Length: 506
Image 1 (tube, rainbow, N blue to C red):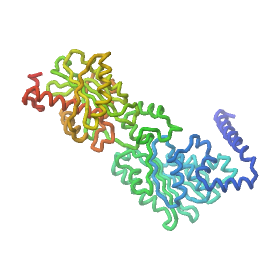
Image 2 (cartoon, one colour):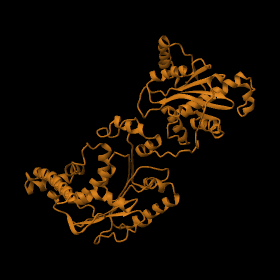
Image 3 (cartoon, helix red, strand yellow):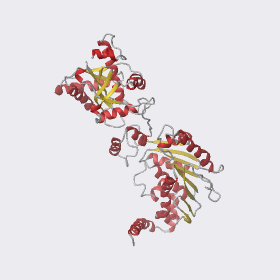
Image 4 (cartoon, one colour):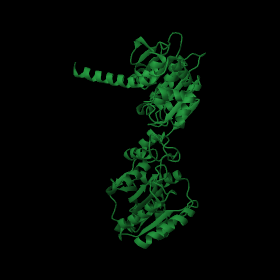
């Protein structure tokens, strides 16, 4: 026996052994007892799935899983879109639910559609394996395989059901099984990033789904459509399907309060680990159903050499405190940046942008003080509008006072201006500066993760403001303060657009 044969034999024995252990539990029941148990199980789809697919259901189902199972199994004519984050088991839940519908005789002709034929066949494999290898299914329903009709992309069962894999744009003709037209259309992983970047390709795929695939149904019989996919672009097939569906279920890896939506499986530590290793744009798209297009407002951010602080007339350390004393990744970022002005250019020397507790936020001002040293006068500002004022009075003033006893006094000036809308301020005050090359991040801080996060936030700013922009907002505050201060100091002679005039003064 060759090496490959040995490996295959070992795998077959392993499956036989696992199946044998499952069979032992089943064999204790008489045929009559099995029938009674099956009748009871078939009235409860969640219990049925848990019993027959215990190896898949390793973690307890949460509320959104159970609700989806019950919606899909209780509505023969139904159009559902599941935009569940990665790691929330949307494809697995659909696989087990549809298998329940097939075994109980409620659905008979299943099409599984994906972005390519190979991917559709891969997604169809768990269905095929279930009827080949799941001994519990065989014990209660018999061997359902119809021999002679058993391939990776198309197979039939002896109870009249059939499965077929289709790639996008393939002809769906010939999908009738006996007299039964397709009564289940499972669309999974249909969108691709590349397709969504091409409006013509996106339109072609969507037209194929609506004009070629969907009409394969019988008008007089029920059709179940389940579309599985995340919202990976502002315009994508999943979004179009969701707008037409009877129910569009959007579930992210975290809920609106920043907690794991499936804590039994996905702990906060694990989620935070993933978030720390990929960009905000990637995390928001893959885990939060929030596609973000880079460069909508700020096409690119300039990094350059900053003039020595000693050449500045003054600098501003501006902080945005975000009223949350938490490291929770769903809360707003706290931010503090040191910004200076020289020869018509605003320079972001260094700073901090992270989810931290209030005590660490106060420490940031001391870090910025140490960074600047005695090289220039630093004015320390903190955002403090009417809503934030009680928080500033009750929390930050005592914190600064406590730090002063051991680290020295820092004079903090509240920025109490009534601010316009965040995007309007950012677009109006920072975008022209950036476009003209007059807003520069310190190239010496290029490896500082806080500065990297700041650049990332700049690139993701758009009018919808779905991405964090606390660092950008903080820089805008510093730029505004600098403008006001220079205007006052120069008694009206300062003009922001005049580089030559400012070069003589600085």
